[in-house]
Image (cartoon, each protein chain N blue to C red):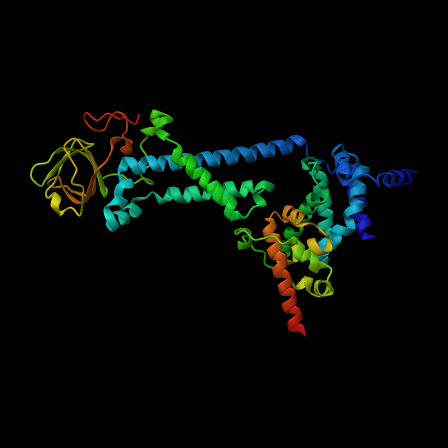
Length: 194
Length: 239
């Protein structure tokens, strides 16, 4: 009965926007939060797996949802929900990478210091090319974290530069330059393998 | 399957009351605290810059670069560098706190940090600490940060110009003599009796003569003289 009731309520929420669901969660609507988790569990797991490595993905997702619920009242419902949630996932992933000491993470990066021109349309045109798709699938896991994350967010999660800038808290120009450098690195890796 | 377990576990935890939302008040308080720290750190930077400016003028160190390479060397040697380190640390703290906001992190660090530094320096230079409070203006600056005692620069009032000599009276009322003004590399010929002057050089204790490498007249208001006037008959028109 309870499950059936829950299922009915969840299906009724399918057309409700993320922001509206978040607003309901702020009023402690647990079903609304369940719907949000259902919407994002696959995407967040994919993001965590690609960015932080497969082993910790479920832990990262769990921590992300716990922190999202705890801090939901800090979310501004006038803004898009997904960058806010991914920001939490980003922090969790960074914590896991740091704790695991698998890869070095720079505390400070010169990329954020100087202005870079953001040419979003150029990268977007490349996204659909066969070469880029092939490169991404084969070598994205071999990129350093600072290049891997924008690649995952842009090509796999399909976020805009602005959203990636909000998730990683870096300037849009830095997102563009990291994507460009990441692609150059991927091409070099491909050339080395051939 | 495992993912569904995660969601079920979270929902169960919420329903059991073991996972609670933080109140809106918590985030408002957090924002207010952050704003308070930013304002306090910024105010500290502005105040320190204002104080450094006051000390540079009052000690005469500000005028040393006008005396050539040696003047520059002594200026650099006398500068209160500890304050620069403190200002740097506070500015970094302000920038780190402000980078939580989109309006700051969406811009390159060069722009946001540059804006913070420019804003605080302009505010610091514009702040006349003497106008804050007389006690602040005439507060004895910490000797560990601001050099004390006889330094490479002496401020005095010309009380006589016999032959090639210049006779001064300093703030302590001592009479100091420059024996031969022609031997001073940076000497301003338009010095007249009654002028306030800045002298780059050192006092020889035994006979109160000055080993000077530069001398120039200075307007009283540029010396930021303390209250009461440090020199007999010297009013402080900048007040």
